[in-house]
Structure formats: structure tokens, C-alpha cells
Image (cartoon, chains in turn green, purple):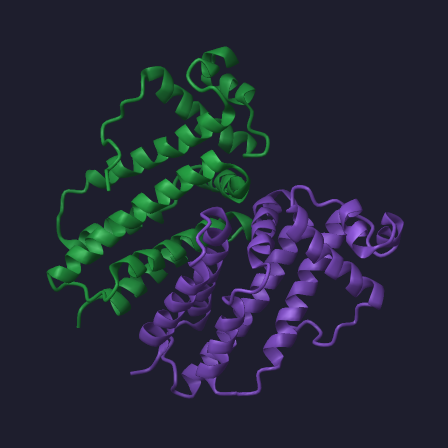
Length: 199
Length: 199
């Protein structure tokens, strides 16, 4: 599986548009996200956005790809190769509260709920998910090889952890469950400790 | 905590409208759900629906309450009092594929994603979630008292299982992850077996 590029090959303009998209999503939610609202955050005309992205769907798929690249570059900053520490840092990254996160997660859940109706967006969500599961599966398989973990099926273990992560992404905005991220981090820890760790 | 009524006190008309709402949601999705579409499934006029439910939000909150009552009445059919068997039957009920489920889960995820913008719907989702967690917590606490389980914090264990359930409800429609329910059932089994069961 080819890893997405670690260095950001987006032009300065494209990076600025991605950041403007993030702010517009937090401010307006997904249902009210327009190219106009993004242009307002970008500080330029809608034409300046359409120069880079033909349609809103193209822009949204590019935005999801941008989020994946950011996630990957943060994950690559972690310098340890010890499987347990690498797995913990992946889970920390996936399940840590950040400033403005409630608004962002609310908008992302809306976008996911619309994914069944939007091929470009659904396919990019699937790519992001596949790559994240690949990172989890690899560290779990490495840890099993070196005797730290004891996973019969690293692919299932990776999916199990993603179920917990996606449960938090569902509960946090839709039930206003402020503790969902912390509860999910603890549930993932229990899964690692009791299901994955070798005796 | 007062349990919702086990017997269905809805009138025949109200029950027929709830069933029509289910079919309309599966057919049209949440974004395109109108009182007109429900009336079409019901086989009567929109006025016949508005006689029972003032607004679409009232109807949707009533529909979520109807789903909870159906879930509870199915759960009450289980005759064993053995904690492990009762917990397994709750998890089976929450994580079993049913006919037409993909369309229904797609519509429900849309409705959940809109919950942050709709007080009546969000509050009813919260009540449904609270009651389901209460059922899980009670059986886990009973099992801990009788020495079958070994849960330090039954409320957290109930939330952990709900994270796995809601992960499947998120992944199944948004990632087109057909295996999400079976993977989640296996993950819940691992959690029960390795985290909750007494040595």
C-alpha cells in the first residue's frame, strides 16, 4: 500500500484554502458550507477558489486528503519504534480533545452522514480510514512478531480500535457526550491491555 | 430511573404512522423525509398525520421513542436472568443485521448528525442512549455482584460497549463497511470476555 506523501506538496494558496475550509466548517457546519463562506475565510473571491478546485465535492475530497496528510505527518514525528508506545501515540492522536473540536466534529459527522450520497467524499473517507487502519494493523502485527502483543488477527484488532474511535466521533456531537473522547481512550486502553497484550 | 412502558399505548393510527415513518425513512433518507412522504406510506392525508403530531420534529421524537419501546419489549422477551446470557442477548439485539438495515442505518446516521441542530430529536436520542446504557450497566453490575463479571465501574463498561455499537452505526453507512456489525459484535465479545469476565 502506497503511503501518502509526508511532505505537503500543496501550493501556499491550496494550503490557505484548506485552512479556510476548516474554519468555515467550524463556523457554519457542513449543511451551510458554501464556496462563498470558504472564500470569505480565505479573504479572496470564489473564483480564486474555483481556480484550484472545480467543484465543492473536489474541494471536500481534497480537504479530507489534507486531514489525512496532517495526521500522518504528526504520527511520523513520534520517534519511538516500541510497538506499545507507537500504538499509544496513534490512539492519543485519534482520541485527544483539541480546541474548537466540538464544532469540527459536528461538521465532520454531518459530512460522513452525507457520504452515502456523495461518491468522491465517501471514497476519500474510505481512503483515510483504510490508511489509519493500515497504520494500526502494522504496529499491532510488528508488536505480535516481537512478542509484545498477542493478536491472532491484527486486521480485526485494527478495526476494533477504529470502531471505538468512530463511536466517539458519533457520540460526541450527536449526544452532546463531552466525555466520549476520554471514555473511548480508556476503552481503547482496556482493549490493548486485556485483549492485545501478550501474557 | 423510570422504565418506559413495555406495552404499546399508542393508538392503532399512531402505530401505523410510526411504521409508515420507518418505511419513508428507508425509501427517502432523512434529508428528503417529508410529512407528505410519510402520508403516502400511511395511505392517508397529511392532515391525518398532523392530527396526531403537530410538527415533523414532534413526529421524529415520537418515532425515536417508538424505536426505544420496541427495543425494550424485545429485550424483555429474553427469559434468562443469567448475567452473561442477558448481556449477550442485549448485544445481539444491538448489533444484528436485519433486512433493509443499510437504508435504515443511513437515514438514522443522518438524523443523528442533525441532532446538534434539533433539541427535540437530540433529547430523545439522549433518552434512548441513557436507557440502553442503563440496561447494560444494570446487567454488568448484577453480574459483578454475583461474581460472573469483575467490573470496577459498570457505568464505564456500559459506555465502552455503546462506543462499539455507535462505531458500527457510524462506519456501516458512511464507509459502506458491510462487516461493521459483525466486527463490532466480535469486539464487544472480546471486551466482555477479556475485560469484564471474572478470572
